[in-house]
Length: 152
Length: 179
Image 1 (cartoon, each protein chain N blue to C red):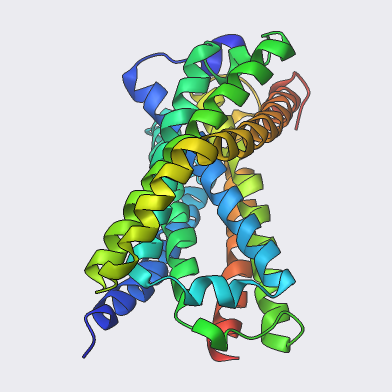
Image 2 (cartoon, chains in turn cyan, green):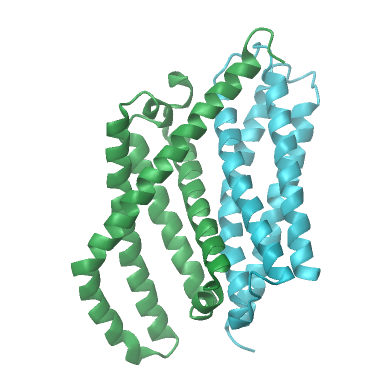
């Protein structure tokens, strides 16, 4: 067995784990922030959870980009051309990943802004769940494209 | 808005720096991969790199970009303060930090590629990196700094648009009568 084979397996594992953290975390934060809680009326605890998720999200999306390129490298010269059906799916996936990163920075900044706003301000409770709902939708598209690329 | 995102402590500053640094790295790499894929050059480029070298290059870019982003953010008093800083000052700071990032990454890439050549038994090609080292010093600094400066200004523009959008979004939601 080549010394690089375990590394390639690790790269694939890290890619899957990173996506699980992004999607699972976004779903959890959406659920927690959308659900009224008697013990967290102002939503401070939920915002703190959201802020912690943002650390995980950016670490994970960095790992996704790193390992994603590693996975493409495993194809070597056999990487399908952009004109093939697989190549077209890869193009779409890359565009959606770009959109996810571009739409995620405002979400992270919004969480940081809201953490410094008074809890009683109207609208605060609606902002955060909406942001994470949108994130879940975009991430689900990325996951669907990834599965299609891997098994389609 | 100025009070809400400015560095309030080491933890807050690390959070903002890490977020922007990772954002810049991911946008740059994914855009580069997309362009290379569409031009048909991706397979040739990736097949010339082994997995470990590729991961090390990415990690180096991530680290230098996050560090240089932190330098740029601190220089204008935090990301929100950047929206109140004269545009010329923001552009100059972004260009300077981007140029520094370009030089640092180029130097790191030269070291990583030289080590990779040694570790993969291509020691003969180390001469290329020694000659390349002179190239880096003489020409590479100029090239790395120029490309880095252009990207730094581009990302500063994207960041400012995003900060403006967040301000609008939060104000719209929190305004009396907002939904």
